[in-house]
Length: 223
Image (cartoon, rainbow, N blue to C red; front, top):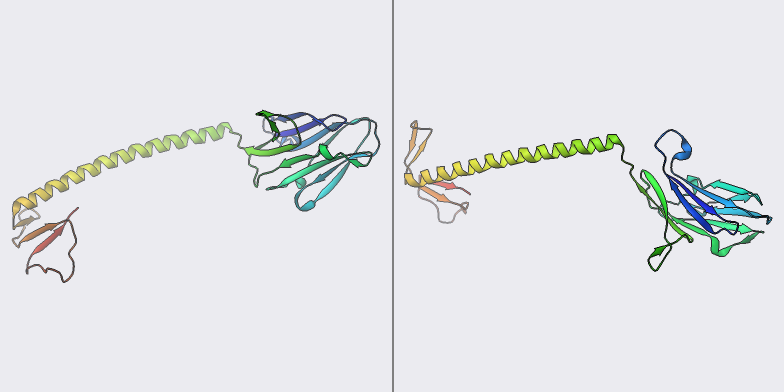
């Protein structure tokens, strides 16, 4: 995103432009901050930019001309505030300084917006913030659609598994009822093995050394 401040000769912000061009390999259309000043004829005009850790740079303004400057990424104070100060006739214009707040990370397309507000109305003052968002490409949209399709398939498969689990539970209930009906006997593997020891059914595990079972008793725990 190209973010451009347009200032008059008194360094008042007249316009903030946020322009996004289709992606290409032209560097100038990538995330950038520009300042354009329509300077008057006063001598000794310049801009002082301050970034992270007090890193500064001074840009001279040619009187009587439109001057355009790029605030390079070297002065983007991530997680902090960068300032742009304006001087005319070597004097700081104290109430014209621009403050730009940056987040820790700027993803994708980055846009500057005004933080100045009065009675619910946003206006172009001295305080601004930059934020980022991802610019969805056709490939990104297709990837999202594919993921949604995969999730729907997973949900469908989970539904089938739940139905199978319900069937297993019903089978277990039937097996339990068969065992209860058998009384003291249980038939294993059809008619091949027959166990006639007493059977105890419970939903709780045995506690060692407490109420021991008689010899030969079968203790079954089920849920």
